[in-house]
Image (tube, rainbow over all chains, first blue to last red; front, side, top):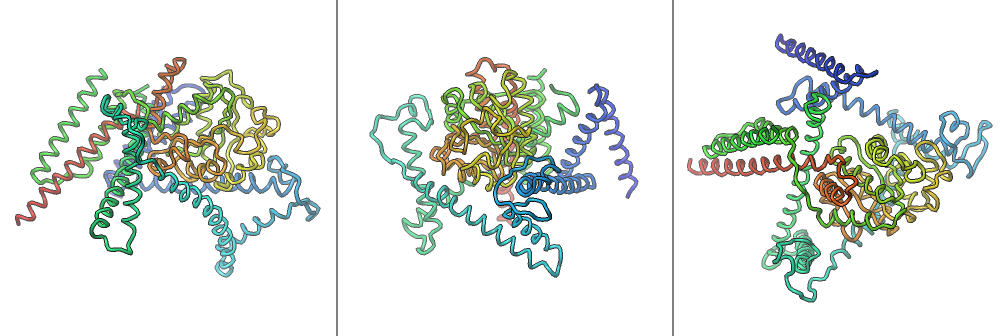
Length: 277
Length: 305
């Protein structure tokens, strides 16, 4: 480690220690030290992650690794307490439910095993879960394919029907829109330059764009005919429709990212530095 | 002081962009770190000096507002908090204002989450909206928190036909049958409106696919901006309203505040975020122009060579 890196490290530690002390003094109360430490740590982590925009550095690496490690541990604990204790234990054993202090679901198909009532139906997920962990044993790794096949099959079956109904059938029916309606004039579109979709002219144009957009977008993906002549024109319009869609997505993504930055800066200015109310 | 600060900040940003444009015309490249600095200043200045805009609700936001507004008093509204802290800057304001609206109209609010992190986000709404603005609202009678249940789409598939099977108790382990608010609720079909607040998976899309469409219960959502374009096609056929990103939340906040004078003094975090959004978007547009100018200048130079 170079001398400059050590000096920078010492300066950063001193700055955040000072910030912790000042914050604790401002916060007051019984848990001032702890609360001030948490706010200061959050501020340090935020700045450490943001420092990547200058260039890769040890502070960024530290924050990144800490985040990954804590996330993995957090989700493992959540998985145990919500799936195994929350969903499985109440369905297999009254004694275990009492031990973990979760309400026993009761009823169903019970049988005695080691003098304890177990609902055998729920033994299947336990066995499948153990088989999934066989992946960690090189010689028995192939056993993990059985539960994996069960998971893939179940979700494929569940999703296939729902996606087919909602994303295919219902979305096709949503494109069956009236292209022409009885004409009552331009309405608010001319009078007040209103683009509200409840205006007759705007509604008609919207329906026309939906119809043409879907048709031309599909033509672009139809490769059994050469894209020339009117067919090529429609295909080019399809590309434009797709580009506008991607542009809208990009715009929304930018808005989302800026919102995150606003969130972090608000935290730094208000909770850490206390320079805004 | 605030106005002077924002004028100085905007002048600095404008002057800096002009300087970069002149450099681009001369064919000099822009360091990427300069772009980060400009974005930082353009976001920080409106936060510190507070710029706000009046927002008019778009039809898709207005539709959700009208739906909640026109439900008869005592209707059962299910709100699912399907988000985590990274999404909170965008989705928490939506969750707060929609929950406030539901309780202000004296509907019965049933809260749940499909995300483990959603419980902590609901606790924020509980403290900052329900307990602060509705001290008379009773847990288990006017609202209830059913908590988190693991299983993603599997949970939705079960509660569509049997809600109690997945949530035998509320988050405080009070049994289902002891909660007056849940009298008459057997499945999702017994709700008058379902609102999912999220932006990931499972989220609004899964609620539409696994519950809204099969049961025909009006379903609406509030989502992070990243996924909003993918959900617009569901309106108005499969969704009765959608708040897309922070702009949707700001429109809802403004409209709700204007039409409910009792909450005129409520916090409006989404509206406060629209100032930084606007300035940052203008700066990004300027950088797109500068980037294109630089591209054409460089290409012309190469052609000349």
